[in-house]
Picture 1 (spheres, rainbow, N blue to C red):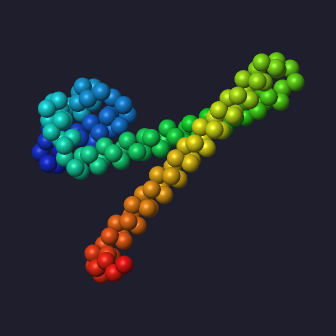
Picture 2 (picture 1 turned 30 degrees about the vertical axis):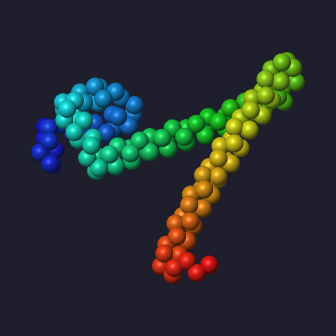
Picture 3 (picture 1 turned 30 degrees about the horizontal axis):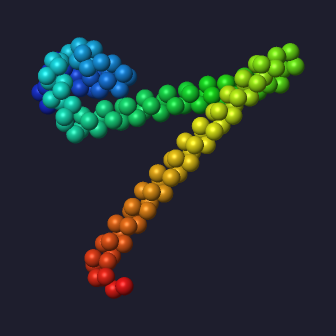
Length: 139
């Protein structure tokens, strides 16, 4: 089968398979194209954009599932900590898990904010350099 640009195989299938984690060998088989054709097509910016979009969508879906499971996990840890029949060892492990996850989440949150601030700072430096170039360095 040929696509609109005359290429054999199905590039959408190739990208979907790769975004789902398939090996290139498995993806080209599913897309009915040769390895060489797939590698050539994957150099195309439009194909790269399609693959990136599909990968981002897949990542967002997995993240949403993990958030849901995370809520259940936190509820389970809370239940263990509150259970009068749970042993002290189980309560201690649950408390350690909660604290460890809280610290990791906070570190990730701080890291994201730091990256955003660094990007904003770089943009401000670029704007300042352009303004100085336009007006001349009057300082």
